[in-house]
Amino acid sequence: MKLSLVIAESALELVPEEIKKHPSVVADSRRRGITPTSILLDRSIHHAAMSRLKDGLRRGRPDLVHITLLGVTSTPLYQDEVVKVYIHTCNDVILEVGDGTRPPKSYSRFRSLLEKLLLERPKDELISVYPSSLPELVKRLKRDWVVGLSVQGEYREFEKLASELVGKRSPAVLVGGFPHGHFAPSTLRVVDELVRVHERSLDAHVVVGRIIHSVETKMRETNQR
Ligand SMILES: C[S@@+](CC[C@H](N)C(=O)[O-])C[C@H]1O[C@@H](n2cnc3c(N)ncnc32)[C@H](O)[C@@H]1O
Image 1 (cartoon, helix red, strand yellow):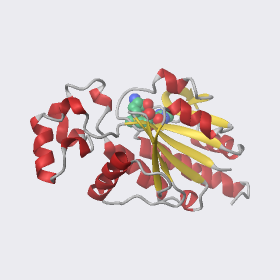
Image 2: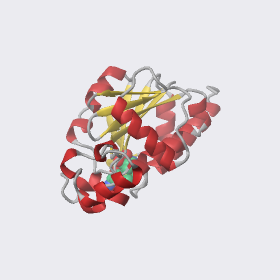
Image 3: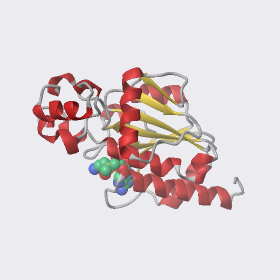
Image 4: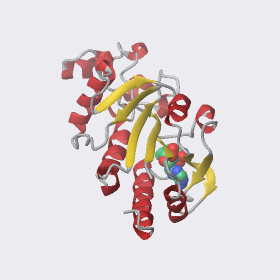
């Protein structure tokens, strides 16, 4: 079994043109010595500017992607190349994480790396970057089961979900990389099942960590590891 994990509709992007002249963005740009549109949009710094943005509440949270990515890439399952990670951004850019690649643990180093990746969009690197919508990505991956994780889904225990995932050859799990709200209708259309794993809304890194742990356990029980 090879599991694709997609961090979907992630609140990850460079500062958009429409707020590049806002004082909070200009001050950050001067402080860091780089142009405003080369900076990762970050609500903790650009909050005042973000009230002008459409869907502003769902944007500017690269920290969520960082924490989720660290949680996955530190697991034995990832290190044994059983899990492959894709980050889909709210601007329809994919960051495909090469097997075994470990992101920087320091947030400032992660931020600088992501700024470089989003500006230069390298191919064939440890993390390759290319434009694609989420439905296009899911179609291209040709997974045999696509599960969307959402509080709006049908309840399933972690263990049950893990055993269904382990029973497939190439499943994909979509977890939201945004702080508020739910998957877009276009995402829901490419999902085979929408699953809720807890009665509460949890942080994505908690949900992902528990699923990976349950999958590891299930694979050991069924002698797949
Ligand atoms: C902070 S939540 C996004 C907010 C949204 N209200 C929600 O809970 O779905 C980030 C992501 O974690 C996953 N998630 C959080 N709680 C979940 C739950 N109880 N069941 C399934 N997925 C969950 C979903 O993929 C969600 O998009």
